[in-house]
Length: 392
Ligand code: FEO
Image 1 (cartoon, rainbow, N blue to C red):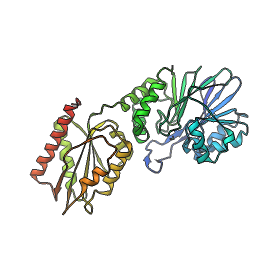
Image 2 (image 1 turned 180 degrees about the vertical axis):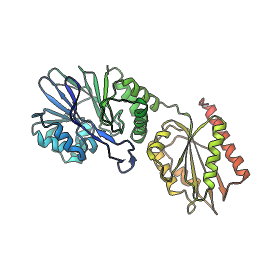
Image 3 (image 1 turned 90 degrees about the vertical axis):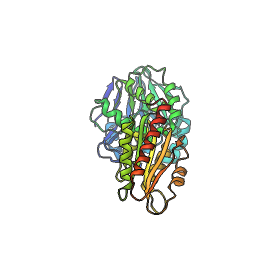
């Protein structure tokens, strides 16, 4: 995309990546993404806010071709999808000063091999005058690295938030055009990288609470011209209270576990509990992560493989443990051929979760009538736990 003006003094000069389908070699990107970079031109100085992923550096450089001089390059975050083309910007503008938080300085040097004398660090709340425009730096650590910060353009009332409030979503419009679509994209993005840091996110939301914000301009996805939409969504996602829902992540090899989880879904529905069923053979991990944002209960469904969990189930448990969702209860169901040690293994994979572990339900071979009654009992227990927690 060519440079696009947001307000009188500010342009979007980054790149849309329609084709990217995987991030961190892990996270599916069904809607592509963008690497947003913003140019702020004051009456005396000009600043570029973030660079782009190195794969799209040619677009950023093309968008800057008519900008002969740049005074400041502000790096909100050291991860390479924003910082990776900083060396090219430093080369193009030999006199530009690179500005970042104190914690980011070492990260940028380590990751990009930058020279320390090109970097100036700024404190939380520090201001930078560009003449008739003023930038205020706001430290917002752990969204999702320790060094992250935002910039607030005071006169234009724009918060440049980098990953904070972002969404992996490619579109040609500069501003959000469909809040329902972006809600889902921003939620899965929050789940994938920020959910483990909910306490820090809570503090950061408090930190920006007093700002008068007309636009939130993240470094992925469209700009929010109704900031309350994404601020309200974040308040909901970081709250400690889960919803009346169950995430069931399972694999079935010969149909036994599948019969059990399907029966569990129906039994939960009869009791007014919403279930989200994920067959881990071919699951979209982003959807699974998103469902974990407010689930009260996590159920793992696994057949025994050499006594232990199916590797896909172990992988999902490992991911859930890393994402630290707010779930209050967990359970294991499944089947085995001749013996199993799945319970100990599952518990060992979930040390970060503050959950009450419900009694496991593991059957030998195909589930029989008594086993289906036991599944219904598990559904009843989950419904009762949700009721006692004020969720149902
Ligand atoms: Fe979009 Fe953490 O980088």
